[in-house]
Image (cartoon, rainbow, N blue to C red; front, top):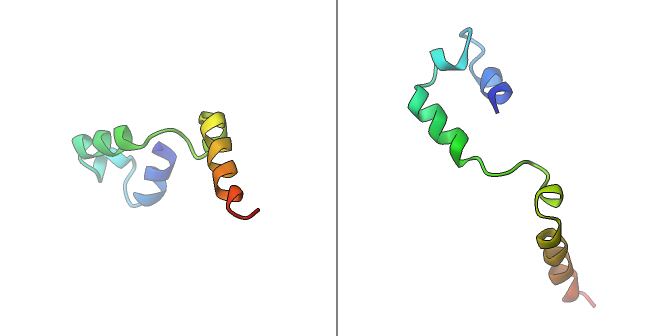
Length: 57
């Protein structure tokens, strides 16, 4: 997450210099899980895929 913030705040040395710390912590704490849903919740992900394709049969 910090890497992303560094990319968006390239005009300053650290993201903290451009973004209020409370705002930064709120955004980071609201960011759930990772980009890889299948790794975080494999059973739920498989169930979603099955439900989606069930209507196509």
